[in-house]
Image (cartoon, rainbow, N blue to C red; front, side, top):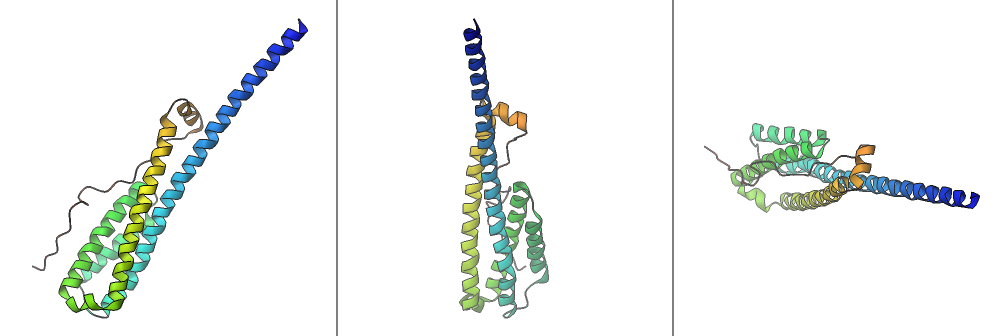
Length: 190
């Protein structure tokens, strides 16, 4: 009888060990996926900061050629400050959309008002640099959304959703374009 009791005890301990191992594995997997999401969001922040850092160089180059409209420059500067202050993916999306619009209006206004500026090597190099940065931002946003999807699926899929609920893992927001960003800003000199 003693042998049978020991076998049952070992079986119970083995089952508890397997359950603990599954919980620990699920928890660690969720931690890793959450870190991937945070890393991807950081990559977006880095690229947005890179773009924001390029703007003063762009402004200095253009200043050498023109006296541009102060309100347009102010809009770019304020939008840049919002990007630097954004903490969440949603805040970053809103601030980035505002900066995109401000830059587009400003660049179009300046290049149309001062066509000889388009031929300036510094201006062209900075414009290429901004375009490259925009591509990097797009890739970083895509990578973030992929990491967010993978994490969100893990948080919602059974049985990990039980572990996620126990340890406070919640779904994250996707990086989405703001309404109206699909249309090209109109520049008018009226």
